[in-house]
Image (cartoon, rainbow, N blue to C red; front, side, top):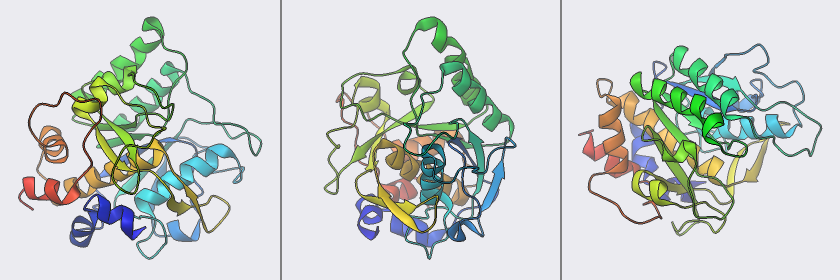
Length: 282
């Protein structure tokens, strides 16, 4: 895991902070096994009664726990454990199904409701490691309104770009309040499976997304990857930056993470947490 952290310059930032409990991250995903030994000291708050896993081996629980481990596992664990001092607001959206079932795609309206729940609960960052069903203007309107609501509250939304290996965008990645994230390989190049596109290249980032080790919902750890993992690296970086720059607003944090200057390519640059910290004067 050291290689992934070094690839995006996270070690100097992590050495400065474990994160502040006042920085709350909304995790819109599957439920989380909050009794995992490596989450024992994590500040996890469930926004729905079924925020904790009922079927630990389910795909939904496995996914949510894996992403949670990247963010708030204890630093001594094998997971990236980027910001264990931050508060994690778990807003489960994936239903727990039988073992091996694919993770379902929520509707735009369901995602919009989850996003608004996180913002109203005090999230300063919301991590979306998911995609919605087939797009349509009428179906996407509630999601656009929810993203507008988040932006109006000064919330940064970090979203996985998707793993379809296509060039294109979605209602999520097109929205100006969102930082879309592409999976990068060990050399920092976009993974072949990652989606790319104009808005992703202009306002997005690449982050580690291949052979990432994080928490397994049935105990210990597992290896996984994709843009879901990559998005969590960016979310964790934003959370640590906000923990250090407590008076910064969302636009200042976004500029620190994304850098300045126009972009035209469909491939976004690699996250550089050390450079972001310097841009904030930390």
